[in-house]
Length: 305
Image (cartoon, rainbow, N blue to C red; front, side):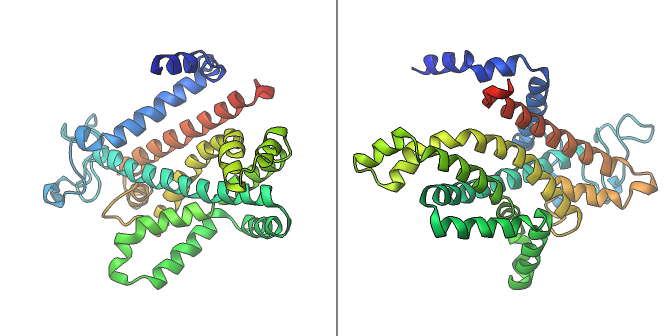
C-alpha cells in the first residue's frame, strides 16, 4: 500500500510540475538544507551558543576563518560575546523556524475555522466575522504584532517576560495573519456548500460539523496550503523584524533577527560578518520558501500551468 501511495505521488501532476521547474528544485534544496541544519543544530554545530560556560570574551569579534586574522575554530567568525557565528545561525534558525511554523499553524487553525463557519452559516455571523477581518486588514500586521507585544509586556510580570516572550511572539504574529485564510476559505466554502455532494450529505442527516469536516474542508485546502507556504516566509521575516526592533526574542536565545540587530551595532566598525551572515541566511530562507509558494500556487491551479 505504501508503495502504491509513493508511486501515485511520483507520477502525480504536482510532482511532474516540480521536476520540470528548476526554480522549485533549487528552492526546495536550499530550504531543506537550512531546515535540516536548524533541526540538526545540536549534532552539527561546532559550539553551543546557549552554553555560557563555553564562551570566552577573548574570542569576541574574530573575523571569518579565511581572513588574515581569522581562527580555524570559527568558520564564520564570532560575535561580540565570543559566540561562533555558524553555530549561532544554526541555533537561531531553529527559533526563527519554530516561531514561523507555530504562528502559521495558529493563523491557519483560526482562519480556516472562522472561514468555514462564515461561508457555511452565512447571515449575521458571516457579516460579523468579515467586518472584524476588514478592520484588521486596515492595520499592518507588524503594527498589530507590536501592539500585542506591548500589551503583553504591560500585563505580564517583569521576571517572566523573557521566558514567555516566545509564546507572546507566536501569538502576536499568528493573530495578525488569520484574515487571509478566513477570506479565502469563506469564498471556497460558499461555492462548495451549494454542490450536490453537500446537499446529499445534508439529506442523509449529516450534521453541519461533519459536513464541513468530511466534505467541505478537504476541497478548500488547496489554496490554504499555498497561503500557508507564503505566510511562513512572511512570519519568519516578521519575527526577524520584531527581534531587530528589540521586542522579539531576548538576546540570550538569539534568533536570526536578534543576531542581525546585534551585528548592526558593529557593522560600521568593520565587524561586518556579525550582521551579514545571519542576514544572508534569513534572505535565503525567506526567498526559497516564497519561491516554493509561487510554484505550489501554479502547480495546484490547472489554469496557471
